[in-house]
Length: 316
Ligand SMILES: [Zn+2]
Image (cartoon, rainbow, N blue to C red; front, side, top):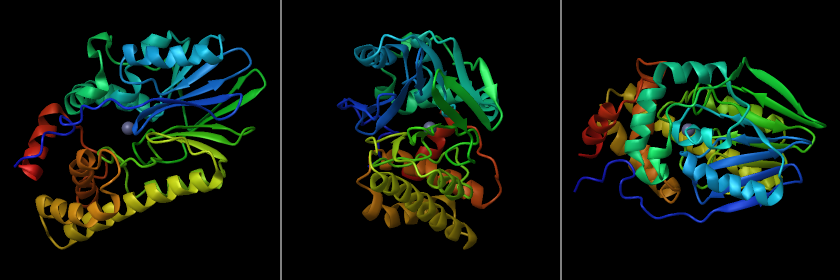
């Protein structure tokens, strides 16, 4: 029996939480669906990752308006994935900020990624017809950008490659609060289809070196103690390392992709199979790991067609 493509069987709506981390920082989370971060400065609000559509973003705005009436001036894209960026227009921001690497990825593969992601996970693109097109950054930075929202210092940092080439974290040094994007997940399977698996653990080291007291992961509950932050970092590292190790070994032994997938799936399922989107992610994750372990240092573009071919080859 062939598994339904990607997340076509995932139709159950999640419960949303709006967590207060400090007077300056909030998190909109949804039981493993993509999170949005909110930073409240002296006279402006910053939103980190937008939700997948403008209609979905309106629910974030409604929650923001329960805690502040300051204007939403900044939208930060932690990376280029459609499910995080296509709701941006709802906020009517003055600036959409991204790393240069993220901007370059939108230019190179944004259209393909949008079509592929919408087909993979229909539930996460509620009212997809409200998406006006790609989200284009209006401000692009190299490696690091400091913003002062009045007295609040906000650091946008590219600490290294991991989930994508352009990963950006948002760090509030005065509050020791971090928004990590998909570099860190909690109770949710890391998607590695566009990843740099060899680099990812070092980037997690760089996050840990800042010693966040609280961290909002890309998916999963807000981590509100140093012990929880450590659990999020450790869990993400354990998955990324174990997955890549299994695939790399299989590739070195000359096994084909399908065999590497079967073996890696069986090895990881007992430990990580309870994390949300495990069955969705694994075929994409193993495909990318096999590529990186063999002859593709950079992730290949996923098109809607390549998605389906890969899925049929591994799950058919
Ligand atoms: Zn992502």
